Length: 95
Image (cartoon, rainbow, N blue to C red; front, side, top):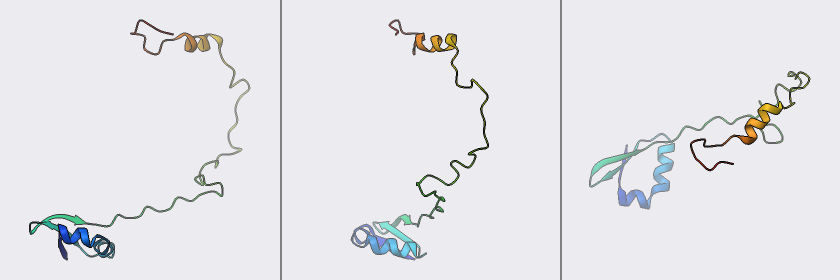
């Protein structure tokens, strides 16, 4: 175990980080009393990517989903409700 005081830790932070990453226990002390412990962060596995940079799972259902006719048509009453509604109905001055 490596124990370093704060001044020493500031001076040798890179070396202390390397030692912690190598698996050594590194403790930083204040006035001779242990204050914090340096521990390495476990790396997350890389997400497989497509050539365009997007995650590989995106587009995996291509060609497997179909829509019925008129799925994107708008109902006039619903559209009017959206257009005329107030965002905050409790306020007096609306759209």
